[in-house]
Image 1 (spheres, rainbow, N blue to C red):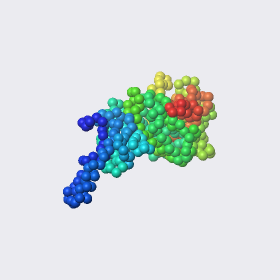
Image 2: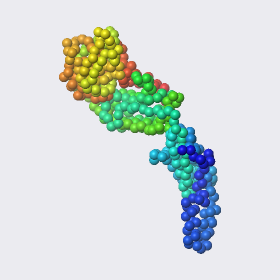
Image 3: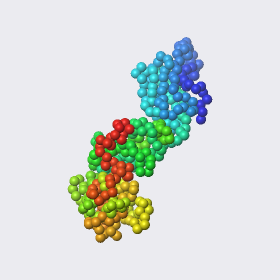
Image 4: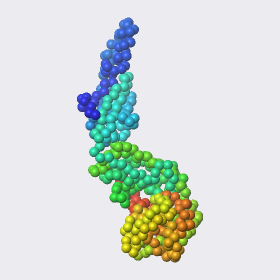
Length: 400
């Protein structure tokens, strides 16, 4: 809706038409007497204080702070700025009491009401609206809210649209931990081709740590081609058991270590060395426990004699490119002796069931050995731990 009032909004905090003055006039008419009359005269003669707002009309620019300034001699007592949904823009009054500035900027397509009160005067108000965004950016966050995850899972945000203003976006992402965990944001291109930023601790999380993210992005511009954010986001999670899965490609063993103690040691067969079917090595992270799924060779680029189409039980995803740990009873002749799979970590059905039941999403799977096709890429799942802490910090838009 377009505001048809004059383009520069002015608030009159002691105008004759204010509620306070109208009430005084009513009391004079009913009570009579010279005292009442002189009081009304004093109210009518009170100096008017004008307050200017920097934004006006119905198509004001989004992403700007709201600024309210006095043009008279009074000092501001309070200023509130609310939107049509009941949200509030907080702010602060200047040291001289002459102006107020919001701490956050305005969001696109939003109607705002400004109410200001100067010393000794009634509150006055004005309204303005911001232009609707041509493009809106949204995010997908992991881990999800109120979850419990393993010690290696980063806090990960994938954006629907490109983010050119990375530093500005990063400023609005606040991570809070229950034990002051040291960490840093790092930007990358996700495996999906979208922009992504992860917050990774310097070292694995400590068990029991509580983590929360306040992504105050409402009113932030992603930059060219990305569009505006039109809402804030929140998530929180807790770090679960301290456990690590160690996979030795050369020794053909999978071991589960909990609180420094080995609780499982099972034979396995990994990817066939020497080509596309070899496994990745490095520190990867259990992305999801997917149970029984259909695995088809064409999804990972294997055709011809390497083709397969199987229903696979106790599937645990380690990368976006299709590396899993799972039950592989058809490969039992090779468990503990030879790597002869199509890239995954295969175990007997009982062993896979036992591992599946014990591991947590977010547990690190540390894969070592020479029988690999290389180190898992940073964005192929959560390869964050394959980057040194010093190099990881350079990926922050604020530190790099």
